[in-house]
Image 1 (cartoon, rainbow, N blue to C red):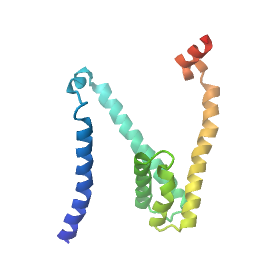
Image 2 (cartoon, rainbow, N blue to C red):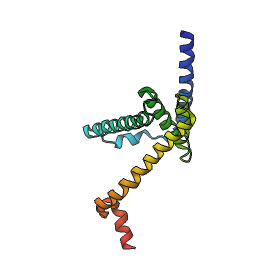
Image 3 (cartoon, one colour):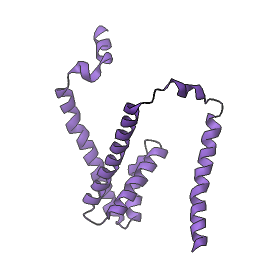
Image 4 (tube, one colour):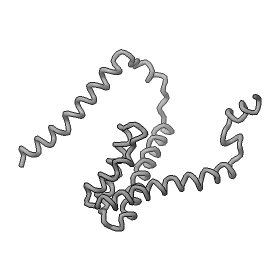
Amino acid sequence: MSGELSKTIWKMLLPIAIGLCVVAWMFHDEFNPDVFSKFNFSWRTATAIAVAVVFVIGRDFGLSWRFHTIAGGDLTWRRAVKVDLMCAFTSAITPSVVGGSALAIFYLNREGIKIGRATTLTLTTLFLDELFFVVFCPLLVMLIPDADLFGAAQAHAETL
């Protein structure tokens, strides 16, 4: 049992170590530690970071809830969170054309959803994302004044 655990830990730590070495190598010549002396960290900064973390957790909870609900209970909460995190990871490391949604079908299939249903669930989530933008973007444009929404870009366009 401990042999399997050490293999699993080794499989996790090796890619992390390689990634950290690559990042250190890339930033070695360009890193300037004096930049951090210009930052003013205060309680407002800590509060903003805490709020950002809460929003990220809330977003992941919402996306997991969406997978759990749309799957009709075929995905447990744990498996829904796993699919969501894998989609987010894939979206972060692949070009935007591929994104996390393209591989969501395979992640759902790996969690026990048949491939046809996984395709349907993925397309449904994509449709709901697009529907959100189609509904709320016009509402924002109608409810928020142009000067507040576009700011300096709007003023610059009017002078041309």
